[in-house]
Image (cartoon, rainbow, N blue to C red; front, side):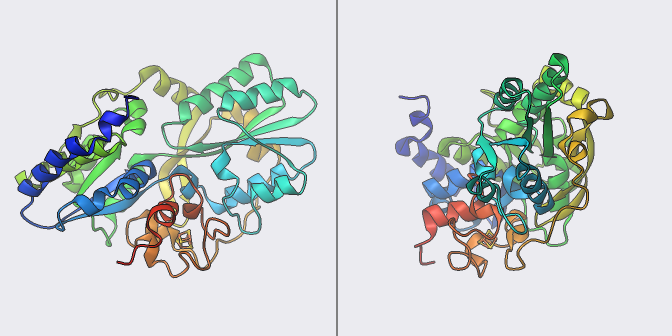
Length: 364
Ligand code: SF4
């Protein structure tokens, strides 16, 4: 046992599949919000085990995928400067901008480094006082506290050579956009457990009521997902639209209060562009004025940098659950992990990457 095997036990999964079968009386579409859930579903074939009435739709919850192309272009512009050490999580390096990506900058001699935490980038700044160190602060509510901590700590230590390129997005406004869309196909939602471990579940209550949609907070392993799907279907069949928590071994209704407070101290909520989707009002975080000195967009004056996305990429439709990756004409031909046209093909949480890795030879 590795405290994961028990959540992947096929014998334990069977009764859940039977229980779901016994509940379903009509077709339902359930969106899993998070790309981590998508990968688990596709990898373990959970969608193929479910009764045909249940359709799983992949959602917008991949932070790398929704980072706007202009910000990738700004990252490329900043990382190309000889006085800069650019630090990022690894899966941002292959994400295509309008003309280049960070890996190409690195291959041309740019000092682009993969780090595993923003605090690692802070250490790079401390160790290199004559260079400017920039961290690409990408993510949902989950990573915002660590990035806020890095900025607050940089100010406390008086580090003037550290800044962050912020691309933080928030889940609830994205769900509002998906559920308000005239193309909405979603009956129920599986919400991402790690996001709720930080933000709690309160923000989902009005969304569930307003849109009459059950929302079940769920973890990422097969048994978690099956139990979450069962909870959503039970609500739908009973005509309920509530927020329920499958991931109660980690998620508390109030979330992580100190982490939320730190995020509020450093960031403010603002409008944010989502790659392939467009601007969603009040759906992102930016640094507060008190922390402007740590804002890489101001430090390097990259106003106006940024070109268009590939006209062939349909990732916006994939991220809203309107098409599946294999319905994109470029999937596996013009667009592969070696030659990606969109971020969803290279992100560890991207739906196109999941289908390419686990389903590209499937014939349906
Ligand atoms: S397969 Fe490639 S081009 Fe098509 S939506 Fe996915 S990332 Fe974009």
